[in-house]
Image (cartoon, rainbow, N blue to C red; front, top):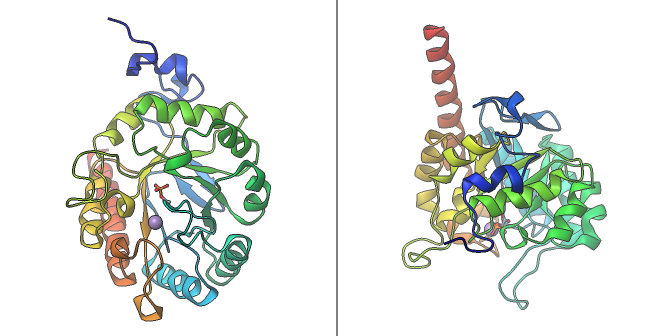
Length: 296
Ligand code: PEP
Ligand code: MN
């Protein structure tokens, strides 16, 4: 029985011809498009670690976390100035002021910035400050927003919808690509399944990483923080993601000495744990390079 809208990987060449391996043979079976963000390169073999607070709350908090990320060897700084929150009564982020704080943090640390944009009317404003625009899980299928972000001329981090199939995720990426912007990095951040809330926040879908690598030439990273919702799971989930072929990680970090974060405090790790994850990522990469040289 054929059901309308039901997708399989066989439909990908029709859904996302601009991004699909099958329709772009120049990438072969395993080449990745390198996406560059202010000198940071996703997909060139060396894993990229993005880290920072869930939300930009204040100048002090953001600077403390940014310095910790820099010390730990992180490549980029994350932080939401505009936050998608479940309740409209919850803290919504610091908006334009948060963008200014991120800019100051970049000036001091040199770390490029990725931050979320949720509204077509704010794409121009956010693009003025950010080095990379983040589309959050809840907006993965906001098609006008995807098109607007595609026209903004900045690389895009496209998080997977929490209940999105691979076809829906790559279809969303195609909306950005259709505007002439192929500088897209995909981010797996956990999907909705029955453990939700019982022992973890979402279910980290590691299996999707090899599927992404097989079907598109875009780089893909993993967000172990939202996927698990539990700080103690972030480090093992990070290692597992790299073993599955992830091109990088996006991790929430807090500086607990300067106060408890206003959002997602239970999944935030400290700078020391981040440093261990970065070290693991780099050493693993070095080992792979050495092994390749030996067999070459
Ligand atoms: C985030 O990364 O700041 C975020 C809100 O994550 P997600 O969109 O995956 O829920
Ligand atoms: Mn968060």
